[in-house]
Amino acid sequence: MADGTNAMLVGARRGTPATGSASWRADGFWLLAAVAAAFTVAQLVLVGPGLGLGWDETVYVSQISAQAPPAFFSAPRARGVSLLVAPVTSWSTSTELLRVYLAVLSGLGLHLALRVWRCFFPPGVLAAAGALFASLWVTLFYGPAAMPNLWVAFGALACVGCFLRARADRGDRAALWGVAAGAALMAWMRPTDAVWTALPLLLVLIATRDGRPALPLLGGLATGGGQWIIEAYLSHGGLGQRLSEASRIQGGLGWHMAVDDQLRSLVGRTLCRPCTGATPDPVIMAWWFALPVLAAAGLAVAVGARRTTPTLLPLACAATAAAPYLFMIEYAAPRFLLPVYLLLAIPVADALHHLVTTPDGRLRATAAGALAVGLAGHLAVQYVVLDRAVDRTAADRRDWTRTAADLHRLGIRPPCLLTGTEAIPVAYYTGCASANPRGHNVNTTEEGIVRTAGRVPTAALSPPGGPPPPYARGWRTHPSAGLDLHLAPSPAGDGTR
Image (tube, rainbow, N blue to C red; front, side, top):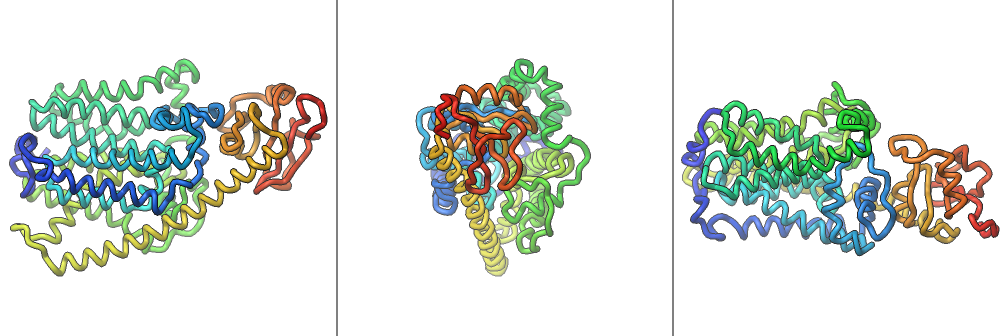
């Protein structure tokens, strides 16, 4: 490191409050709270609480749900999201209530993660960082979503900030708890992401032989990832087998240049697999290329001010968090990089703050005006992409709702079983269990499906006009919204279907 942890506090940017003596007003509590509140309101207005649950969401929510039996839980998934939503899903089937709960919770998460950094950066920089991150379409889209990546981001920012605080002030016991909590949150949500993100922190501990933050960091990772590891031995044949299975489901981890895939996903594609099509318009990609440039500028500002460490460490964690998603998988989803964007947000905001203010704190009018124009354009682009993503997603989920209604009309009601194309999300909407004899979600055999069909209402789903699965040949077919429904004979043998 270019300078020590004590020096980074002495050389902190002008206006930075002292850790122990600052009032809520002085350390920017209300400013950060306003950004967090705006983030929550923007989610509810621009995404809306009525947006139905997506495929992955139905898997996580169904694990502790009053709506439907648990869906198959594949090897890469972790239980953190299911625990996060359990206070609502364990007793309510209301998607609207769940969306509002997650929007409020994500606003609180952003606020707490940013406040950790108040010893190192002034409130205006932290508020700007929060606003920049919250303005991205992908952040707004996944704020009220039952998905893990945003929570990995909050855990990462909090963990890195508390790690720096713990090394700067050996009397800051709260920071040690923050390291543990941030690491545990990351690992509860996505254990492998937590390891990649924490790698620079582990290297710092090894290089400096500072064991004080080591126990909270390792303990947090173990606490969050322990259940995933135990489950690997109980259900997947061991940790190595689970990692291998997770790699297979993700297309085989190895050298894959996925940068272009991430670029194609910037148009609002929530999953780009296979990731084909033209590269988006440069206006849509501009912010993505500006991020590393502004982050590097933030590092240069920090080096010049002799406070390198608080900027360099989150940049290093962002780099290791991004590596597997840019260079090790052969597809893309924009949510994968949410932890990267949040870790970059503070250095980027610091660079922009340095650009528009003089050393004595006065505003540079020309630079501020140019920045305001650029940010206005950025916000317009993000809004357009978000609006299209929400419309497209809502249409897909309305189809699942219509299919569920058709199944209910045809007598497929809980307890029941669905299998075949899109069986997992449609089963959740219908209140049924789901089963698949092949693919990434294998949890039964064809013989098992036939046996179950003799006991409970069962249907197989297939693309419209396509042949039914072999075990469903002879079952009665009904068209629905983008799917054909093949209904097994009534278990009661009364001919009602």
